[in-house]
Amino acid sequence: MTAFARQLYLAGPAWLQDVLLSAYGLRLRYLRSGPIRSRTLAGLRRSQWLGGEELRQLQLTRLTDVVAHARETVPLYRERDLPAIAFTDLSELQQIPILRKDELRAPRATLVSERYEARRLLAIHTGGTTGKPLTIHCDRATLQRNYAFFARFREWAGIPCGARVATFAGRTIVPPGQSRPPFWRRNMTANTLLFSSYHIAAATLPAYVNALARWQPALIDSYPSSLAPVARYILERGIETIRPRAVITSSETLMPEIRRDIELAFRCRVFDHYGAAEMAALVTQCEAGSYHVNPEFGVVELLRDGKPVETPGELGEIVATGFINPVMPLIRYATGDLAAWGGGASHCPCGRAFPTLERIEGRMDDVLVTPEGRLIGRLDPIFKAVGSLYETRIVQDGPDHVRVEVVVAGAFPETERQTLLHELSDRMGPSMRIDLIEVPRIPRTAAGKFQAVSRIRLS
Image 1 (cartoon, one colour):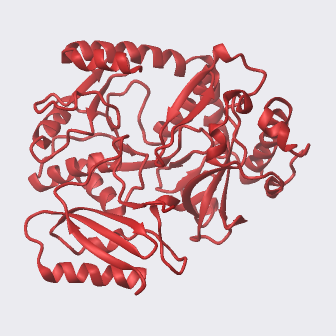
Image 2 (cartoon, one colour):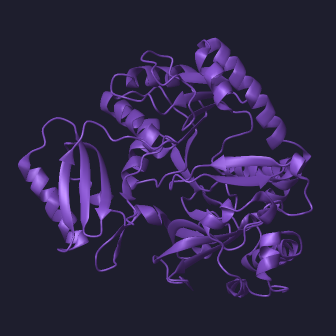
């Protein structure tokens, strides 16, 4: 949406905004739905039950095709002189250099396959957590393949096509200065009620909950940080009138306590997933709770210091090679996100032979680094015992200094303050200086996300 179109939208009454969103929804449905999506989804319903060796051969075949296509038609890869190889083992990917995020900011002609006409391409813009925008080029066929995977994921969650949905995400659908409800808009084309993530506050929570109760969605699709205060409000007041079949979360690391609160509040299971606008990797949570790498979507490697991470539980950077976007194929793309392998697909009761991840930690920029070079992640457990805290954020603003911003609900006893500082020091070591600061609120990113841990890059 252009700046002018956005101004026109925000200046209109709520009913007109509903109409405009629904019209935009028609365009999205045209782009994302069609015969390619239907055929892809039918194939995915079959391939999810293939055995491990069959999936490995499927990946090797697609990997061979993607690399050959990129070598022959994409200037960037032609310059790199990719090896002409018929892959027999995924480890052979290591012959290809890593593709860094900064390289995606090269001119379109360098990155896009010469087989596609520029005028027929679609551009997907993503700001990312670094604040530096990326543009991903694709076509309608790519979008249909991508949304076939999401349709299968929704089937894992028990959500049929056309079901009523409520979403909480980073879209600016309500004027920023609006102080009274409705803080939501309706996309009638998609049977979806879109809630603003930017207007959630103690004073507005009753309106949000009442709107959810009236809408009665089968699915709630949300950033974890947007739905967490809604869930806490419901639990504190014992509200039992909102019963979706499932909640799907994405775009942020889902903390255990937030998952617990959401599942208790809505009496349903949370299905988390990891993906990105780059369309290079997709990880979805199954009915049994395992995080499965979707092997038909691409190959995922976990690397630490450039070497493969093979030990379950050990963190590594997600490096992805995507299969679904021949317009702008990404081969060994370093995402900047961290994850750890699980114990193996054979351990999942769901019966799928997909690789598993034990956990997804979030971005490397969101992991603290001590002066000794240790990576510190998942500090959230230490805040659980401090009942007076509403929200917290840890910011590393120097090699040996972090500030811990806390939003306090009521009193913040000195004993709790000292306990928190002690627990943080125990985990980060004596060389890290820690300041605890009370703040009225913790701002969200431009995309409406909550960043619990961040590391400011120093020059």
